[in-house]
Length: 193
Image (cartoon, rainbow, N blue to C red):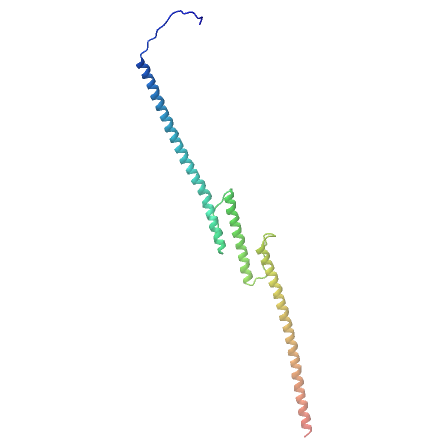
């Protein structure tokens, strides 16, 4: 622009056309915003529904095995060793289920050992799982002590048997002596007559 006026141009627009154009643009913007809002709300609801489904699925994935594990532990607490957890997984809940099943199996071994001891099997090899196995060590000590007590009883029975044989022999000798004494007295008595 050189700064000199070269001419004037007059443009004449009908304001109704401009107002219609503005109104059309505003209507399109309103429709577009309405569509965007609708899509945002629909998308948000879809995300909420999907997340709720995932939370429910993951919760069931964790809660059900935990409930089985708690039920097994409660059964063990009341002495029922026939209950196990039917869940395998590589996660922490799976490790817990495996640990509870291992504990139940170990307690079953101890119960079988206790039954054999109660039935009089003192030649039993007690399985001690580790240096921290209090029950295994207690069973092992019990079997050893019962074997010692039975050995002492057997020794006492042998001594009683030996003593009774000595008493029997002494009684036999006394009886023979008494018989000889009676015979001697009879001889003396008959010779005196």
